[in-house]
Image 1: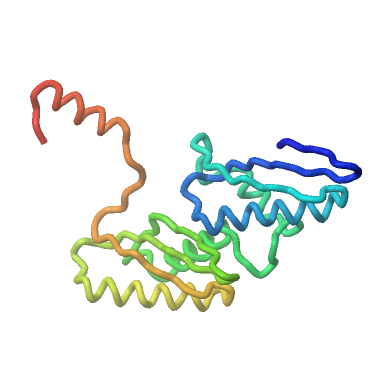
Image 2: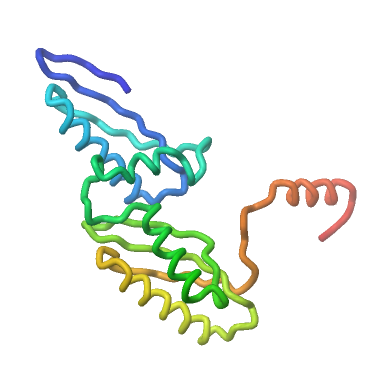
Length: 184
């Protein structure tokens, strides 16, 4: 943070690091929430410039997420945050669709005051595509019923085993195999 004083007014430049895989709209919403909170609590601040930077040292379970879920600093009480959206989707998938799909990733978007969810799930490769699409449609409908503030759900399907994370160790093994003359 950097500040300048002009007369009785303060001008602030604030840099905030957010989870690097957060959507642009969600990161912007975080910046707006912080900007509004600064203006609300410090009336001597004439203008605050919020700069959003990706953090490569933080994971998705950072403490900032918990702080931003605090209702005292939320921009809009009606808009769900990433953590609450993840809880809604995870609960629906585990309670209604646990034998058919597993949640891989969820991306929350805020567009013109609307909440859009992009949900990536994995399903059994034995499922027919039309059956997988029908299950995904049912899951979308359940998610929309669960929270009236969610305007749209887009399910992205992957038929196959769930991908936990890219494993650096396996890429090192491939590199050492290639270096040793092996092929894959």
